[in-house]
Image (cartoon, rainbow, N blue to C red; front, side, top):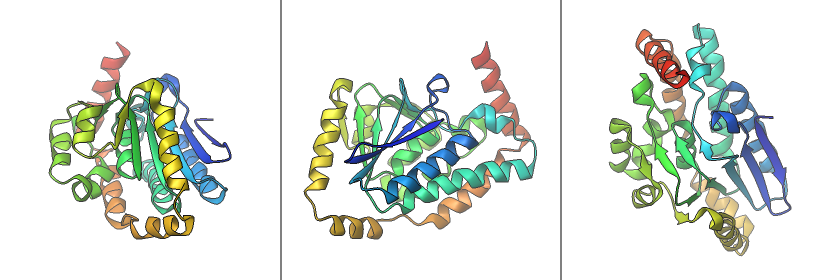
Length: 244
């Protein structure tokens, strides 16, 4: 399984499980993430926790998988699956906590924009680097400016990597703790949530739900860009460099 779902009686855990690929998200991963979110939304948990296995939260979309898309139909299928996971993430009725245990790049970083609370280890690194590949980060483009203002454009237009404290300063992250304190901080957040009236929590969740329309448009544009010669060349170059 590329995504693990489990319920510990308090939280629903969704664990990205491609440790050897830095939890990069291929089509199967996006589908399993979607299905796990739907399960978590129906179980008895207070909150949904998304994290990654190993040293990464997620390196984002699997570049090898995207580079291999050879037709409009293949691209549409891949990105429709991605969008279905994003839709599930936005429509869940419980708070979503991202527990960032390591690097969060590209789509992995964008998941944080769709989460309600982000708890990060102090050694985590963040980057939105799709521009290097001739692509766009759809969630960051569609709702990033509304969420973070001009601070998000720095990440979009430089593709630079920032550390956890910088991510907190711009509002991408809420809590930064040493890696060994991640669970302690998570439990503190869960305790605060559990002390609230849960009907009120669900109501607040519905009022703060993001508009999917702009994200859907951006995902469609990404599916087109993915097939351009420029993007193909840049993705192939990335793969060649990392295979060397």
